Length: 202
Image 1 (cartoon, rainbow, N blue to C red):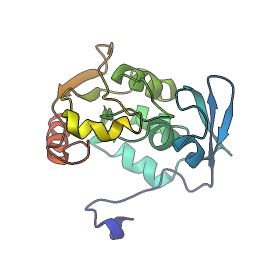
Image 2: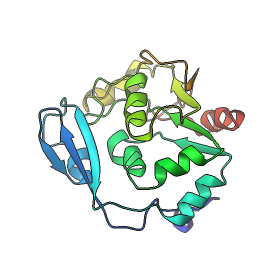
Image 3: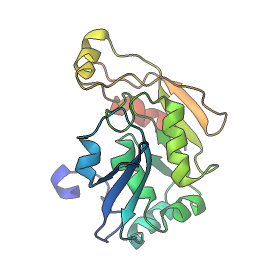
C-alpha cells in the first residue's frame, strides 16, 4: 500500500490475524461482515449497540512499536464502526495507546453516515470511541465548525448524511474547533488545514 500510494511514511496493519467484524443493532439484530455494516440492508436509522471481532486478534508488534515511539497518534477521520473502532478491538491496542507518551488526537468526521452514525453529534462520536478506548486516553478532539455551502451538501442529502454538530463536548479531551473544510468538491477535510492544526498540537 505504501508503494502504490507513494506515501512518505509506512502502512502497518494493526494485526496480522484474519478476523471478521460483527455488530449488534439496538433492536437486537446481528450483522456480520464489514460490508454489511457499512452498506446496510437493514434500517439505517437503527443505532449500533456494540461491535466485536471474531476470532480474537493480537496487535501486530510493529504497530505497537510505532505507537510506542510516536510523537502524535491521530484517530480518524473515517467510518466510525467499520474503520476506526475495529482497530481498538485488537488485543493490545488499547494498552499500547495508554502507555504511549504521544499526544492522542481524535479527528471527528464532517458528515454523518447512514447505517453507522445517523443523527450523531461530535460528542456522540467521542462517546463511542471512548466506549472502546476508555476515558482519559485522548488529549484532543478536532471538530470542524464550518458548514459546507448548501450546493455542496445537497449531494449528501440523497445519502441521508448530515453535517455533524459539536453537541455537548466535555472539557477533556480538549476540543479544538476550526474551519477544516476544503474549499471545493466533496465535503472533505482540507489536508493542509488539518496538518497545520495537528502539528501544532505536538
